[in-house]
Image 1 (cartoon, rainbow, N blue to C red):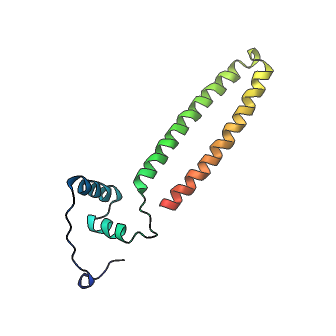
Image 2 (cartoon, rainbow, N blue to C red):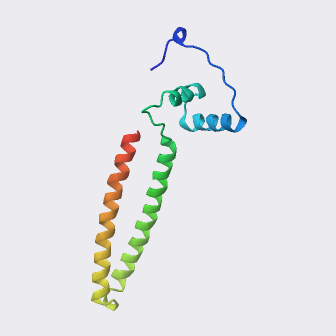
Image 3 (cartoon, rainbow, N blue to C red):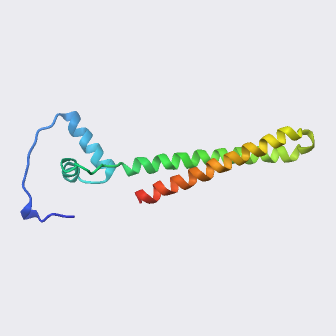
Amino acid sequence: MMEKRENLSWVSVRLKPDVFARLKEESRSLGVSLSHLIRMKLSADTIKIIDTKGILDAIDKVVAEQARVNNNINQLAKHANIYRDKISPEIFKSHAIQMAKHLEHRDFMNKFLKQIYQAIK
């Protein structure tokens, strides 16, 4: 909500260079002006400032890593099917159990990441 300019008061403060640099970097990463960031921080009794870009970047990294894991699992499954007659039934059964666990965890993680992503966007 934008305030009308005539309702605003001017405040001037002195900051150490490291504090000023941190504020500038935080405002840049959040995509808000320095003034807006300071107003947010001053009125932050119940408001938390969240770096959504950082969270989205982390989600992207997790999704990319999951894609690599899925690729490796597909390669293992292909080898298992090629050499099916040379693998003992116990190993095949163990693989199937581990695969079911992986799929369950993957589905849970996908659902959870999707909820986080939708809450941020």
